[in-house]
Length: 78
Image 1 (tube, rainbow, N blue to C red):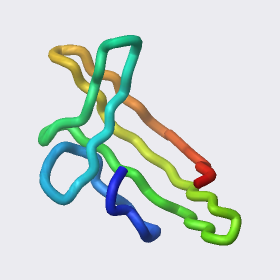
Image 2 (image 1 turned 90 degrees about the vertical axis):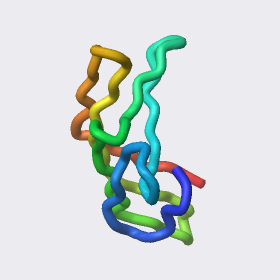
Image 3 (image 1 turned 120 degrees about the vertical axis):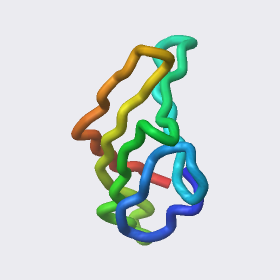
Image 4 (image 1 turned 120 degrees about the horizontal axis):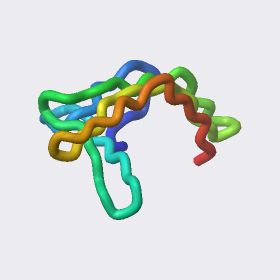
């Protein structure tokens, strides 16, 4: 993820001014495209503890195969 510095909701797809996400199963890559997308919501950016928290959802596609990734959550230390 690039250029995400503040709390808020960000579009996940491969168009300009959005973020790209990949979902990998072994060597097969599934991703969002300009039609199939999702959202990443940054709920907390704690600069003292250096933890970023948030939620996400997206559809990951490779050809005719689609995975629906829902109710994702993360807490990352940086």
